[in-house]
Image (cartoon, rainbow, N blue to C red):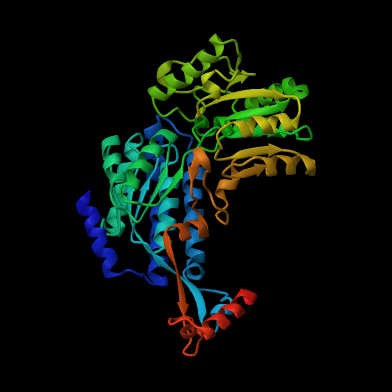
Length: 465
């Protein structure tokens, strides 16, 4: 691993500022890898999961990756240009500008839930910024990781893009390399370890770590629409989505209707589960056991549990299919309200006033996303202005992540920093400020020895700054 890092350092030093055409060529190659190997990538992801909806993989991993890469390719020429900035009166007639330049070597650590998209989106930002990249994909998706390693290294060469496979021990060693920037997507527990390891080298990090993202149905919100989005968000990819709605909050007068609408939407979207090709598997037996434990903990502590199983199927443990399960009015001491669910379990809380719902959200750790269903402007403004989250989708769920014109990132416990599009380019560049002094300027008047002239100049500066 160290040898690969050293090799990439030599590559960077030999060409520390790739041209616009070189960057576009790299992004075109990244796009070609996706298109030329789409079938293999889809097969590998499904094998890693046990079964993964081919339609979901196509939309969420292939199309989303293409969108990220093409967006960067289209805009990189503009992003890498020198950016002129104003020069204040007291510094004129000098001129000022910002010159973006590659940082060097970018480390990217990605999870198993969207193994292609999260890898290629990070690579798109890093390559657009002109960097070399080292990618550490998850050991929980070994077939996809091995395939990406072969495709990327055969096309780019490990001196430019390298893939490091292995378990948590390898990931720990990876995060201790002196990268110029480290992008991590994964759990809060591992994210803290990565940040701690990176701090030894003062490596700047972008951390995307999920959390408990609320879905709030305001009193004016469309209950049926919110329920359909909640069902979709909790079942797509078996709910294994860092920005999935983690729990729902609905006015107490609409609680039973919301539950009925979630059932209705789930029946329509997933009339069967066990052998339905649209229903993806939970990644492994460990995660299946964790989901069952969350439900049993809530049941033992008195929560109302509603399993949505339209065809009344029996699920063998080996099937790794988990039906959408509602936990109604859970208490704060239940694990389902203390941990990120990351699966097809939806806790539903009733509130008396929207202000009360906002206060509950404020009392929790800041989430990576918030979803609000609302039709009244005052209610929308209340929630948007009084809550802090990584991002928001109004009257739908999760789609804000796929807009490459906007940053994607967490805040507080859900992460730090952001990437995607221009923000990702900036995060993986040194935005170097440059001031060019004019031949004729007043700077010599501010040098020692200080006297009357200096005092007069300072008097003027006090008025004009």
